[in-house]
Length: 260
Ligand code: NAD
Image (cartoon, rainbow, N blue to C red; front, side, top):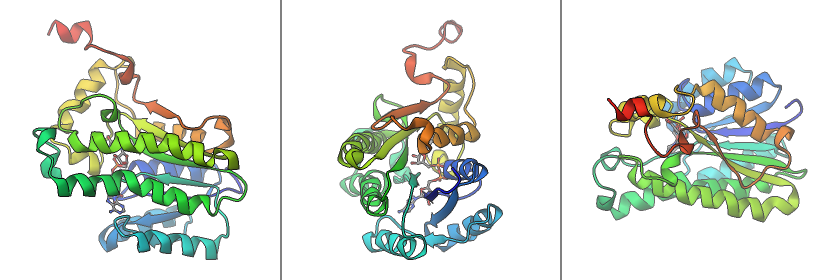
């Protein structure tokens, strides 16, 4: 990644998936900029960024288009061009990440969609404007997009939209050599993950019932992200790449589990 510059969006703290990805990219020589959502997160993100020698740490709330535009104005002034972006942003009202999907309110549906789905399209449009020599864009998703997961509810619907966006954006920007992919991670213990009711039960269930019979580490997401953001994956675009110990291929719990 030496000589490549990229923007990392979605670090909240040192448990964030975006932080695991950033560390891996930095280890391989990439130059990074970070965004953070609000001052409270800023106080956590700035010292982390410093650890890997990054000075470009910018506020960004994706609910506000002007805030997104301002990040790219700064990047244009500082760097001129951009090679990759990581979008690791998601939000839904915690009160609706339990119970029935059918009870989702209109307000939370719209807010979840804007933050967790539309923001990737808006960010991709700005980023593509700075990618003069090809590039790679990556967003984070979860298998609740294609199958029903307890309590994931409206986030699953937003992730389905996000994954469709990956395919459309890949086709829009492919002719310019810009690749767009999604990484579908298995459960990782993070702030966002903790917002889902009974997340701990799902975590251990997937651990017991995935082909590898274990949870995934954030560092493993980092290494797969490195592949998708680097020239190692130069012909891969429009793809949803699972990093979930293989859980998405099984249709039933293990026999041990069934016999419990
Ligand atoms: P996290 O809480 O560390 O990161 C979520 C980030 O979203 C935070 O940095 C938060 O500031 C940001 N965010 C929320 N609303 C925002 C807004 N309005 N403007 C700007 N930023 C905003 O949790 P994480 O698990 O690392 O989540 C990163 C991504 O990974 C999310 O898209 C999540 O859905 C996805 N993901 C997580 C898991 C998991 O098990 N943790 C599994 C698969 C996919």
